[in-house]
Image 1: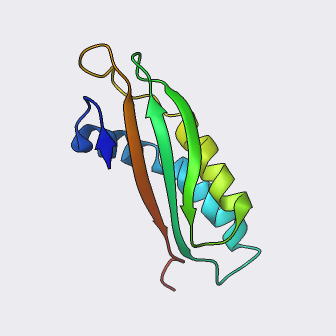
Image 2 (image 1 turned 45 degrees about the horizontal axis):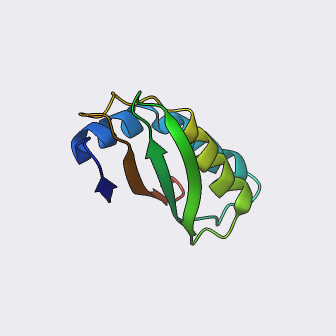
Length: 102
């Protein structure tokens, strides 16, 4: 879900360019808990410069706060293009976490 003046495609591209940060959050805990999986949705606000002002966990079916808070922190470090106009962009983005196939 996106509110504001950045396209979903632009947001998706930036997230995919930074997906290794998110994967690291998950894979670090997956080593300790091999059955860990689910979805973590992050709500974040992109300011007028393209920086993430706020990133917080909206939903967590993984039920692992270490993973979900790490993902929120990873999203907070991402840099987006400046939105069109002078406003902010509010985004809700789900990350699906599943163990790699063996």
